[in-house]
Amino acid sequence: MADDPHKTIYVLNGPNLNLLGTREPETYGHATLADVERLCVETATRFGLVAECRQSNHEGVLVDCVHEARVKGVAGIILNAGAYSHTSIALHDALMGVKIPTVEVHISNIHARESFRHHSFTAKAAFASICGFGIDGYRLAITGLAAKIGATTDTKTDITAQA
Image (cartoon, rainbow, N blue to C red; front, side, top):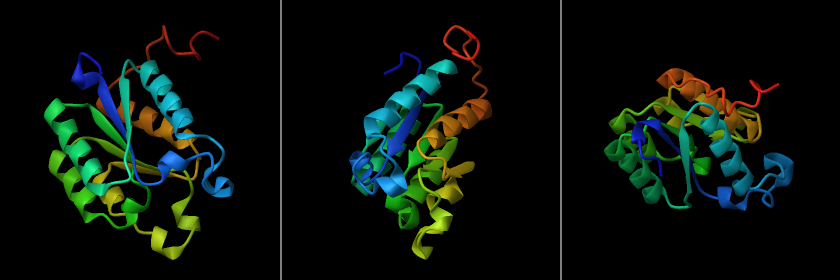
């Protein structure tokens, strides 16, 4: 964990995301959760941030992570709540209660899927929602969160600055 919690962001992944790479690859692709976490850590580092990645299949654990983020004073949250996005008023209320800048991410385009996936409770508690970009959505979410919280690119670790 980072020494400065104000430079830490939480990347929270919900149910079934531990199955990435094998679960419905035609919808979610072949990247694994480890690939997602690596991408998040690398992207956060570009902005001088530390990504702390967690995954749980349990709604209450995710709520506890959101509460912990407030207690620890983290700078922001990237949340892929999976199916809980469409059902969890508890996650919505937790996010609203902590008032931490949050970006919701979905690997697939939830609006092009079954109608029950079109509504997201957690999106209403986030300042932005990104879907349909595959795991690159996490990179986009961290970039947007970094801009929101005023984190700037660390040119020593920014691969685009080295070109």
